[in-house]
Length: 249
Image (cartoon, rainbow, N blue to C red):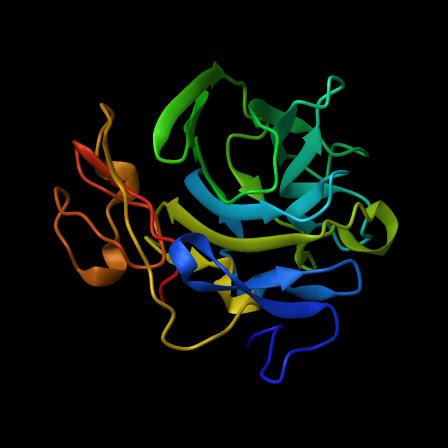
């Protein structure tokens, strides 16, 4: 099920994406949401998120969020907001156990150049650290203590694009493409593009050398072996290459 249908709903428009490929622009009038079960597994452990975004407003906001049933806590989300100096963005990944916490908890934050141009951000979440890639270059690593080790979503959680719901708000005018990859017993690949449904999207890739194991990023959906790579709606990775798809079914 797609939250964006053709013809487009209010607050959503076609824009020129990276390298001229088409993408979706989301304004403050948009209300993009979906039950999380249509997009994600019921829990996360080790995973990666790739977001290709172009801010349209200087105030920032939520690129995406997974909010609990009361719409009061962001269990998983990416918040982009300007620094105090105004010359950079803070890109903050949130990771919260809504059963224990009353407020959304940041897991890791990285600074990227301020502006309104397209940028690719990857958050690779491992047991004790978060690795950040900016435009397919490794840009930072922080040690973290994930609580809980496995994030289990509220059964009635909602996925939002460009906001965090009617209570937390922080709507973001942004052009956005978000992909999601998890690794676990289900070996299930998932894409927030279910909220931005469109057929025959073109894509590009960029390759960079990285040093970590291939296990997390093998795309099981393609039936590839452990040392294979993939560019299908996820971050596909071998032991030496990370690939960053822009748009792909």
